[in-house]
Length: 123
Image (cartoon, rainbow, N blue to C red):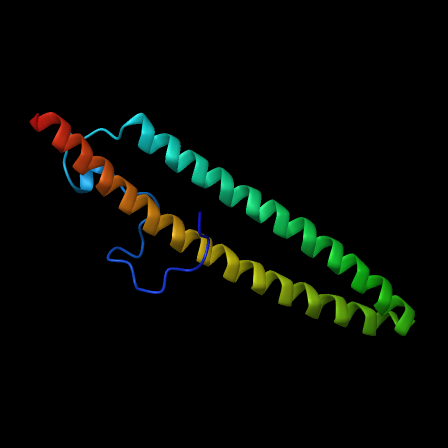
């Protein structure tokens, strides 16, 4: 599953999870759709946990280096705050990309699920 950022704008940018009511009031998502969404959410959670673990380890290694470079407490604190802000900004960008991907794929999968359900009901 790709986690790259969707390059085109979404039709509904505020969409967090498509709702069948947006399309057909009688439609209820299938269990396959729900399982796909749950698996994708879990993969996003796993990716963020992995990212946080890697970044946390890198940050601690940097702290050790900073403490060797300077003994001035105020300078150490400024460096730490700047690094924390940079890491928070990078994580925020990652989360935005993952949310955008989730919005895109969940909408596509919902429309596919609805089309499949409609086709099966017409048989």
